[in-house]
Image 1 (tube, rainbow, N blue to C red):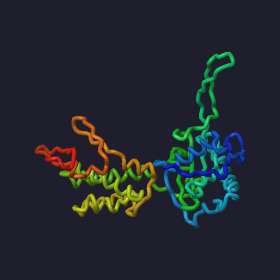
Image 2: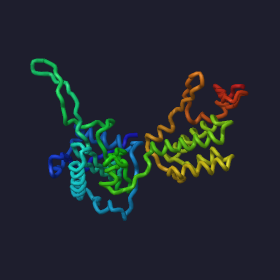
Image 3: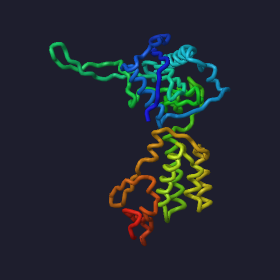
Image 4: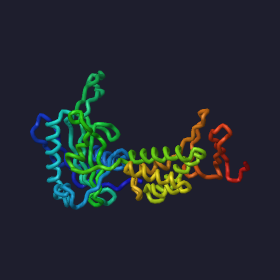
Length: 331
């Protein structure tokens, strides 16, 4: 479902290590011109990013000292962030020259302020001369597309006091990676991205199933996949406490270990909201691959349905999956 998005204010600036200050100015994109289309794509593509890292802030956060309380105060915020980024570009060689985009938008009736640092791209372009001759020329000031690397960003939902920050990091003196957007500009602590969270959940569940459910591992794995899809379909949230109880309810030791491992990986027991992309990922068809290489795509709601699948172990200890074409078919 497409989001309602209105651009209220927009500023562009240039970051150049050869300049002492970052110059910026306000622009007014047309309702459907190329600038407006590009900005809309950036906002909508990245607001549902599974790789970006979320954070929250409260009224006591240092961030509150620079956040604008209204659209009229947006330029002051732009000035602060632009100066900070320009200082970073001048101080660190790994910060490339580029363009800054600041947007105050209304997305689904919520106020969101966003900043994108768009590194200039160098790519060949096709040129046709007046005489019809064809040549290639280097264009060194192209902006990256929404699906390309070459930019980093943050998006702040002022109404929900939530932040989404790109996962791009830089290395200072070959030390630990630093997310400059979070640590240097916003001074916030980031949580796991949705992709990181789902990967860690998958690792914990698979490890626990392999240790405690060897005789019915396939069935447990399919039940876990089905439960995840079912829970997120209910309200768009991950319910790991309920999924853990559902999968390991017959084994107290396995359930306790699973909860402990989830906590160690910073996966909360309380329900966690996920974006549309994560929801679609959990609800996509799952692939079953046999030892002979046969691949079967199965909707998640059918994975642990006894009317369609029967799981057993043969005399050699191999998993056997019997597929029934319909609920009335005899074994």
